[in-house]
Length: 439
Image (cartoon, rainbow, N blue to C red; front, side):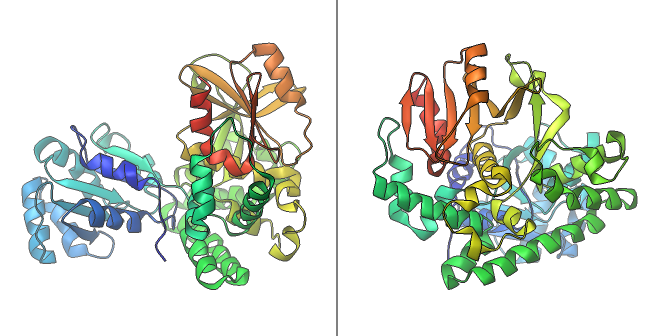
């Protein structure tokens, strides 16, 4: 089963960039980076040559002996027995996170051999870059990030008719009730399965949620093994403690991350590095607080007050040990654990659309889940897990700041009225399109 990924269009556009640089494709383990680069080679190039730096030490040694791109390409072609032609061949360097020589060689491809298309990926590449410091060729590579499948990508694989409806639905039209119910049922299924490619494929091929759960559990078990492999001895214990506290952190009424929840009496300075490691690994996503609503938004974020979300809603469900047999009744998937699944789902969609959200608080009186910046506008986004909503915090925000546009994500139908976009959770992947229409 081949899964369609929307980011492929951006990768194809990278090929023809006037000032193309070597590409670094980041993302958590098992989100499909290697497969996607091979797909790029298949659809946009005459051929691709794949080198796994971790498994092919003979090729890896080339980078330690020379930094001259043409010699590197020539020797790889000889060892692999494949032609590598400028502009026609995609050279894929996979699992590069442990090789400083490969990472540093990328700047020479940019400077001396830009005619060669070089794309790189690696598990925990973000962690590796965090450690490289000034030795890494900053400004000499193009970055992209791959996330698990979005809801609309999940629909592409499971119900193309509904996927087409989501992709083309106009902002001023409410959804017919029959379509609205169909999409909600599919969203429940997506929240069970999640967007990890292997889990999605399991569901499509077997329709067996037990098999999906086994896959998700296996991914969750594999993540801590990376702590031991890629973290320093002093970091491993604290990374593990932060990771193990995620369920407690997200189950609270107030989802703000508290170091005291990691271990009684623990302090920020003891665990800041561990949190940063998990973020760089793509396993969690950090959303910082702000009480100041000004442009540029990121200049006013409070790094000491934040929430952590998991990288996939299916993995989050399994982390909470939520059984599929009980979660499909009514709308429990949206409301369980204070709606954390709904928030997590919404955040991942927002990230996939290129936004870097903060969340807003006003003392202890009001809180809006996300703020995003779009074309010099600050747009508040409130996420509700029910159809009957009382958006008091969003109302307070609108009264205080009078934003041009506000968004409320819930189970209510699509509606744009008086500067408020009521966005069904099933259409959150279209948020960027809809708010652009509202400019």
